[in-house]
Length: 390
Image (cartoon, rainbow, N blue to C red):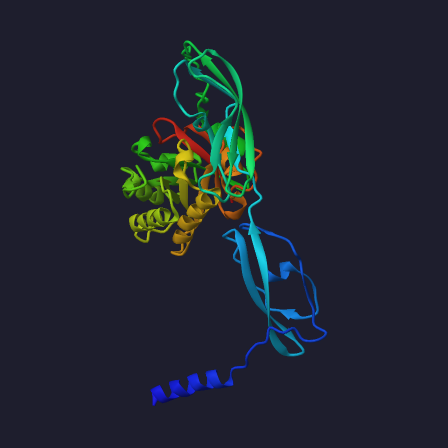
């Protein structure tokens, strides 16, 4: 009986379906805007139409791949349904980006690649082409004014001026001005940043050793971000932080709000998803008051990863979506420079900003790591200090 009903249903669908015509009826019109679509732009069918007197069934176009593509959409006119076919062209008009120092000093006989003295990348291409414009000789002392040019597969180019200094000897420098060594007492930070709209907290890993969370709480700390693990390379799975179990157990016992972060070395969305699943496995259903954080900071070898900026952001999205699908919050960690230049920060709901300064011009963060030399009762040694927007 069930098979008979199924057969009848199929016959009805086939026999009663009405073919949708692609011939536009008289008096109906659709004016399409004849323009290219930028790759990755969020574009809907109705965005292509400048004027019409029909009811269009709207949907979001796929703009992930450049090139011409045929599209179709349905529309209704005088209670009849029709199909409209057209063609769009997805293009990449965005120039690559180049970052680095404006000068490079090398010793006579240097044989490195000047392209590797800068960091460069593209929104779409995962392997933009870099070349050095100008004459220079690594074997001859001198000053050479050069230009580095990076070009993507669509022909978009970015140029960067650099001065190459070839010298007999490179003088060593004992300058330690790379970071501040001035310690910041938590009480001073509390007085500066604590308001009715903010909370003060710390982030910790095994490097802080054993922590007295009751003293931390009594000092005024209300939340802690705990490292759950670290990825040593992009092949092996992460390693559990030696203090993770102690940290999460004792922080919760002291009544602190807890979030966790993974130091990632993923180089693909698939790896990021695997990392997220690993984190979820370590938590084993543990309740968190704050998000699970994707902490990716391996920028030194960026040129060798062959990732586009889109690939990078998709990787972070994949990690965050995986943990959010399991009921946790997700968050992206990044320094001010990389948030403004590499990450599509406006697309992430929760941002953990790293900017070691007394104030920041970066807007839109949920949490701000403002010092890495904090002093808090209950923690021996330095600890990162954070302010969180309630």
